[in-house]
Image (tube, rainbow, N blue to C red; front, side, top):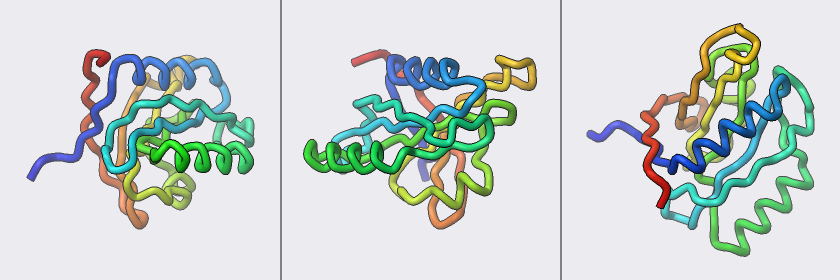
Length: 144
């Protein structure tokens, strides 16, 4: 059986990391949309962390509603849902797991703990289905 894997372009990887670093010390969050059913992350959509917190993220409900309507109009789905951890490793917290409601999405966590000397920079991806967390490999490919 093949190990689960997230494949994304260098440009998308760089945009996610830049957003995480830009919002530090607060958690950053966003979505990468792709054509429905393709599993291909294509359109970077940085979101505002409505909680404006270094330990928690929350999508603004109006922004999220707008995004889902837009994705629906464009026949897209959320391929990646990402956020950052600012002082801990890039691993889903209990809260992250409880809010994970897109079983088809890759949940990407970026740790920006290195910015404060609290830890190493990390970029990791997980599948979270019915509370079960499975880490997957990340492959960064040249821009298409």
